[in-house]
Image 1 (tube, rainbow, N blue to C red):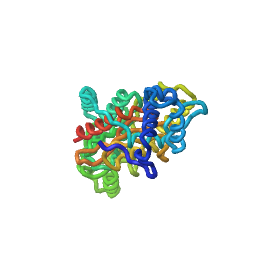
Image 2: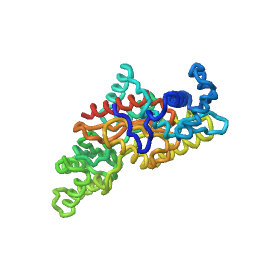
Image 3: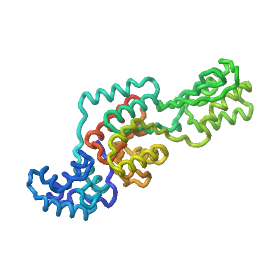
Image 4: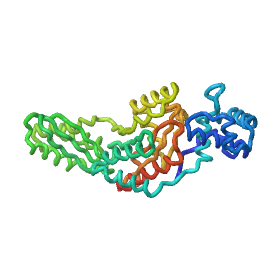
Length: 355
């Protein structure tokens, strides 16, 4: 399993001597267990008193000078910095493995989501939220891949549902207004007309060519059906289609707030989840190659999740082309050893089901 990419100018874990590395590991592992600072006396007990609290304080001071630990308050213990947590993840984290029961649950939840590709992604994000205890998120692909099918479905009252299916398996639905009293045959005719022309084309290509054909009066459509076709294409707009961000389990992020700084962190996190675009840009970084990516705290300038971390993995279509990403977001003390393989396996299951 490929995990993350080392940022530039980050020291190797081997640069720390054995004693410093041991104390550093204990500080980070205590933080991941409790989310709280750890003091020298606690560390001494964790090490069976093999080092005195005074010796441990000296070592922690050296690690603080190296930018790997920090003290949130003058009299408190130490926490890893974003930089220190990154060093631990890249050099000391021991990735666990999923049990057969967890694998079976992931398979069942993804496969049982129904025929809709979007339903499968929503179910996968809900499942990751439940298994991790934090928020699950999925970036659904843009509909810029070749299209497979389009259909108009009457909803009555002058409305119709437009369903577009991409060759990747992605499904998007929109509701449009249609002339009152429109006969069902007009929707069938509009669907047949578009399907004869859009297969293998992207949405932008289909929109451009079909609207040009209608404009030049070359389309064998009556006026009402032509208006339905134009409405169905126009509802997606003429520009590049944006990925869709699906987030489930936000309430989990509120369950472990114990201080004002925790509340501020969650407030920033919710703002980023609401704005979506910055998070989509971060998720698109996961599409650079296979494997799990771990974004720690404020190390990415694309979003403001100081005090939060995100674990994401890309998923591919049947042509092994990366089309989206799935992951978990939560506080920096995520259970990385458990969540990394969980996210990785879920991404691979989605790719297999798409295929």
